[in-house]
Length: 358
Ligand SMILES: Nc1ncnc2c1ncn2[C@@H]1O[C@H](COP(=O)(O)OP(=O)(O)OP(=O)(O)O)[C@@H](O)[C@H]1O
Ligand SMILES: [Mg+2]
Image 1: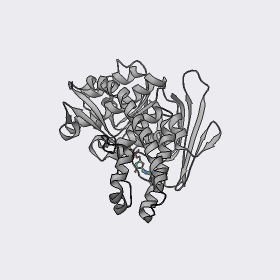
Image 2 (image 1 turned 120 degrees about the vertical axis):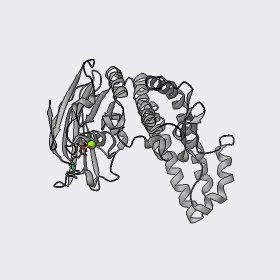
Image 3 (image 1 turned 45 degrees about the horizontal axis):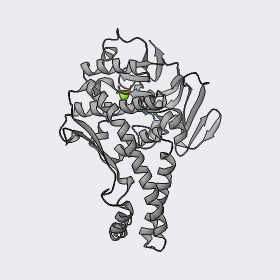
Image 4 (image 1 turned 180 degrees about the vertical axis):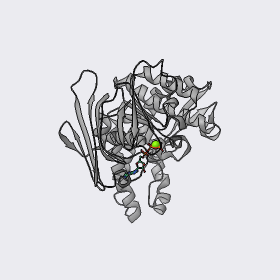
C-alpha cells in the first residue's frame, strides 16, 4: 500500500498542500513550528480518523477553518488506484473510499494500515493497559477478519451487562453472560493466536537493536484463565454489582514484554523502552506483510528525539529494505544521517505550513 498523492487541507498551520510522496522513504525537515508534525498528523488522521496528539479534533483544525480534509490516492500492488478521503469538523467525520461514503473507522483502517512513532510512543509500554490493548487489537484486526465482529459483539454484550449491573436488574443477566463468554473467549483466543505469530517476528527485529536474547511476550487475558470465564462471572457477581461494571474479561486484557523473565518496562532505560516500542510497531508491519502481503505506512515524528545516531542509521537501513512507505520528520537534514546507502528517498522542506520537495 502506497500513498501516491496526498492532499492536506486545514490541518494545523497547513492551509492546502499536495505532496507526491516516494513509494519508499520520505524525509521532511524544517524549523520548529513549521508544520512537520502536522503532516504526520494528517496522514494518521486519514488512517485512523483521529489525531495522535490531541484527544479531540478541534485543536487540529486550522484556526480560520471549521473543518479539515485529508485525501489520498493509494495503490496496492497492481490493483487500481483507490481514492480515500476524510473530512472532520468539530463533531462529525465523513470518510469516502472510492466515492462511497462510510462512517466506519475500520474501513479506513483496512484501506490505510499505518503505524506511528512519536515522542510519547514509549507510553505504549510505560502507561496503562489501554494503549497496549489497542496496539494488540490493531494487529489481530488486520491478521484475522473474525476479530472485528467478535470484538463488536463482545462490547455490545459488555455494555448491556453493565447497564443491568448498574440498575441492579439481574433477571436477564444470564443472556448477556452467555454472549460475553462466547465472544470474549473468541477475542481472547484470537489475541493468543496472533501473539504466537507476532512474537518470533518481534524477537527477530529486536535483535537488530539489542543484544537481549531471552525475550518473550505473554498475554494477560483479563481473567484468571485457570478457571472458565463463565465461572469467573459467577464468582465476581457481587463485586460487579457493587461497582456497577464487569471486572473480568478481554476488555481488561494486556500483554507483558519480558526480558530474561523480568517485565521490561520496570528496568530498561527510556531510550531502550523507545527502541522496544519501535520494534513492536515494526514487527506489526512486518507480520502484516508476511501474512497478507500488505505493506503499510510507517510514520516517525521527530526522528532525533527518538533515537541516537547509531540506531537512526540502523532503522533507516532496515526501513529502506522493509518495503513499506515511510514518512519521517526532523528539524535538520543532518539528523537523517548518512543517506548515501539509502537507495531511494524523497526529501521535503517544510516552512510556514508549506511543503516543497527539496
Ligand atoms: N489549529 C491550528 N491552526 C493554525 N495553526 C496551528 C494550529 N495548531 C497548531 N498550529 C501551529 O502550527 C504550527 C505547526 O505545528 P507542528 O507541531 O506541525 O510543528 P513542527 O514543525 O512539528 O514543530 P516542532 O519541530 O517543534 O515539532 C505551529 O506553529 C503551531 O503553532
Ligand atoms: Mg513536531
